[in-house]
Length: 186
Image (cartoon, rainbow, N blue to C red; front, side, top):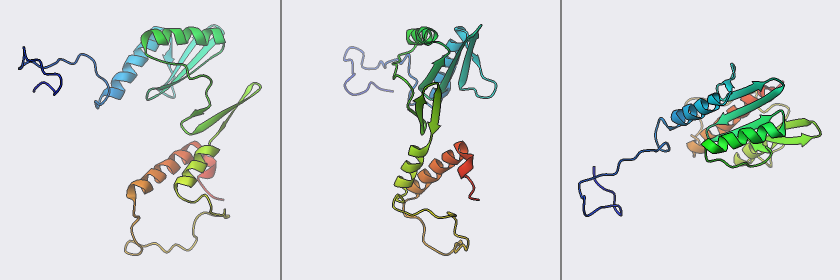
């Protein structure tokens, strides 16, 4: 070990800095962040959802609050604005956070508000995938699958950019997980 350039101390040339806190760039960082967050929200009265470990629920009488944690993004919704503000104050006292306002786009889902209803749509996300694939000018068809396959292990040429192909495959996989109605063509 040695002192990094720009941080060398001529008085103590053989000493190194002891890093007390660091979460980013470590393999265990997501687990440590999740544990810290989960422990804190548990201490203020939240409990884990039985169906999703990233969902935390707060119930007190008629008051209800949900927190959804995805990596370092948090969605918070509450049965009253006063309760939401008090939870935000508690979270800000423990974590460096900022309120980005009402939810409008999260994980490829567009959120639109109408009176007392929330409408969730992935139209924008699907259009972005089509654009990335270079297929935005293509015409629709009754089935997107060639019914007479011409593929073989030794025929054809490999896809030029395998990273781009994998990225598109992952995006389509996520879309079909959340929109099972478009998984199969009838």
